[in-house]
Length: 270
Ligand code: COA
Image (cartoon, rainbow, N blue to C red; front, side):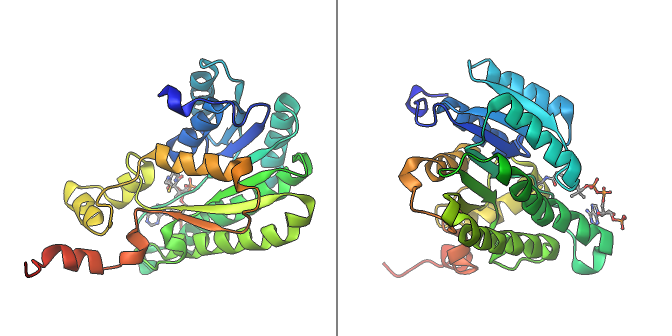
């Protein structure tokens, strides 16, 4: 990681990141650590968490893994308590655990729909609810990882759209309820992010990737580090008056709809 991304901005702070063993959430964990925070990773797979924590610990920052499924409140609360016991009061929380697969509504069983609602929406609530008593207050920051699907309807994504819309409303409600105690709650809504399990599922071929890219005004996917940089800002003192915000980081994709595809194909008169 370039030295420019190393500073002590988050020194002395401790973070909990669900889904932190891979993807965007692992990128955020690495960025938090590079900025001086100690990190506790929560996820379903112990081996994945252990190797992610080990990679971070090699940089000289305290890191640990605490396996739990965010759908299981008691197991999650125990994992969060173990993280607090190891890292001290929690300053920064990222609710990033998520599930996604493309499926038409008629191809979804009730249980398939519920699986995504339970991981994304209930899991975010469970994390926020269970971590609250362990937060260093005032001053703590919670970031919920949302998606463009929260406000842009997409085919094959009814389950995800419903879940992420719920996540964003939860963000706003918690921001109102917890603001008085000095806890900020914000959402990050990434667009298409390269090299993630989500995009491997949603854009599995070069042709579909190209279609996605054409729909992005900035004409590319985001990198995981670009989402992590936004998380750094929202977690920092620079964002101390920002709460209840849904911060979109999608290269403009949600603004453009089909317009960008159409305009890209049109040759304007010189
Ligand atoms: N299309 C339709 N239904 C599907 C599906 C698909 N592609 N994949 C899973 N389901 C359904 C299953 O059939 C099941 O319903 P059923 O009991 O009526 O048959 C239900 O979803 C739960 O599946 P299961 O595999 O038991 O759930 P899980 O809790 O082990 O896994 C998922 C959750 C389904 C979200 C799984 O994809 C996952 O674990 N994802 C994590 C990684 C991920 O999605 N990363 C991207 C993040 S953006």
